[in-house]
Image 1 (cartoon, one colour):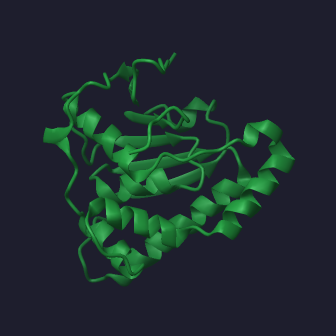
Image 2 (cartoon, helix red, strand yellow; image 1 turned 30 degrees about the vertical axis):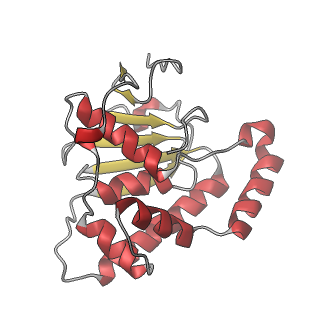
Image 3 (cartoon, one colour; image 1 turned 180 degrees about the vertical axis):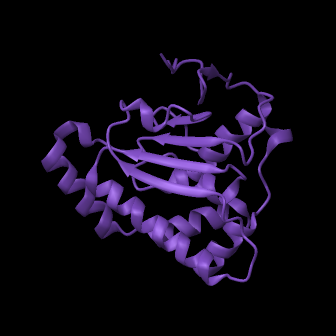
Length: 201
């Protein structure tokens, strides 16, 4: 059984709790990957790594969409529809802590976002790391539909960049379902259960 102790852990990596006092300075993720640069350029974004990610996802969301999703989910799911998203700086912090733990991430890895919402965290991992397979699992049909729109925009932007040589072997996928169906993510090496206790970064 995978357990997350909210008082001592920041992320979950195959059941490994990583102390929040790990220094991140040597592991700061400053590199702008070709994938991120391509998709951000297509969306009209400029700046450093985090600025590109923030601008990109701002371009991909709308207040109208957020309100519609919230209203539909509350009607269908009640209080279970309560929702929040980990911000780009928080995702970078988690990835840096994984690296700081001595477990470098690469093309052979499988990352799963458990409760992937509108897909932004999974998309960020796909666009900013070399991880080979990224999967988001979301229970809400409306949020899952929004995640598929994000994926479609990313795929279209990368396709328009041809003949830029971006790895076709890396995948970003979203499924609508219950994360308790562990067969979907049993082989994942990195799992992110997004929770409201992450501090703003």
